[in-house]
Image 1 (cartoon, one colour):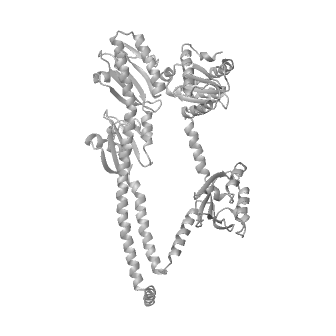
Image 2: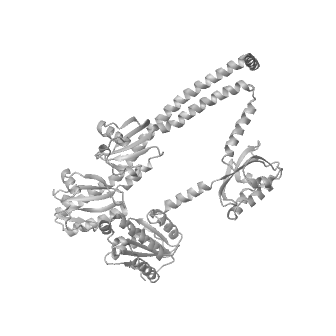
Image 3: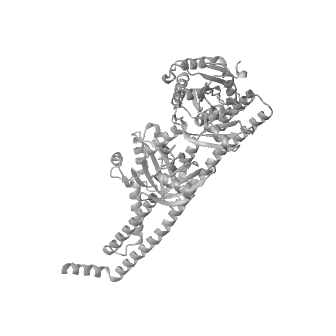
Length: 621
């Protein structure tokens, strides 16, 4: 024990009392600084959470109100127009014709999520989408009619409901007309509101939702919650939040549920609906708490290091030590790192995990330019070799970098993995001429594959696997703007709503998938096949400029569709109405005109039963 005390005294005498006092003071000062900074960071982080929750709710509310505003304008215009017909003793045929035309405009030019206008008008049920109800269908007993009557002329939002066939939240908007008997209504899918709700969420620990006036879930960032009613539930986080909002009318509050702290912000958007944003505060503060603990441990270790190492470490040594730590951190990212001296044509290895590179370099650090060129020539795929060898040419690096301090290139290596090569300027002389550069290579194969997958998903219709509207239109616009002529085919399924209503939406989806398969079989691989939305599809066939050539292709399509067999249709066939227009090499009009011409022929084809095609008149010759 005595020896130990003596050893301690010797250590204290060696270090010196002043150095010990200075170390303790530095340690205490560091603790104070960290505590103060942590308090500031904690407040800043909390304010950010509150602001993020508020921003999410407000942004969601604005987008939802904007989306529903289109529905309100549509039903107002339809109500006004039909009342004009009734006031002028217009016939039911005229009113139905208007509702049909307006339904087509709504679904094709405003929003494909709308199903069209319908209603009980002057004693008759009229449907602008062409749906014919069963004989026992009584419109005056439907919720949309009853609630519209009760609203006494005000626009009514019928409580949303979950479609059991599609899992889609649907809603009806209705209004009683001036004759106190007729009601006009409009159905729409709330998929867009679901998309708005999902888009505002930044972290998977957070969630957002839209609740209707009864506490029903209109949308939720977790689709498993759709269709629930939180005011009828208990013992769940969402039900606790909903009851606080609806009972106390509290739109901004914090709560703790299952030892987790949440920050809630709700924004009322009218109709008794609320857009709600919920941020997991505990999860957000965890990294901050870890930083505090790690900082305290680091300070303690630093103090112990001061007692056992020399106190007067030079500033240059500190800088060199920090640089070494930074390079070591970077070595976990890059498979190889070299410091290249362009003036002396030498290099120094910082880190390297590639055995082939080590063998090719050997023990010499000379001839950096030649060795880098020969190494990359061996370790690069033939697909990328030409471009990469130009990239690693050190004779041109000064010119290519200019005033920039870094340049990168992505390439495929000899193992067919995507890599990223990077030059970083490490030193310049007084004339800004580059003396040293860092050469670094990292493997980015997973990142690159994910990017390619995301690009594919963004361009593909999820149900059918063909081009979606955005990607298909973009490709066609690029072709015709470059003078590429061809045949534009527009088609949709006859009486598709009837198929959904009779056989169910699952069967309707199978019809759309089967039609997409028929299109892929009937057309060539380089033809642009896309789904425009709903049951509407389109195809652009390059280098087909007249009806004679087009008829053979359309006949092949009809034959393919005729062979389609969907078991759920119980032996029935589905048919399509087709409109065709042609774009010649010397045409100068845009895609919208090409679509309009084909669309006019599609309407003509709908007048006929079975698979039928009509060609735009000026192109029939």
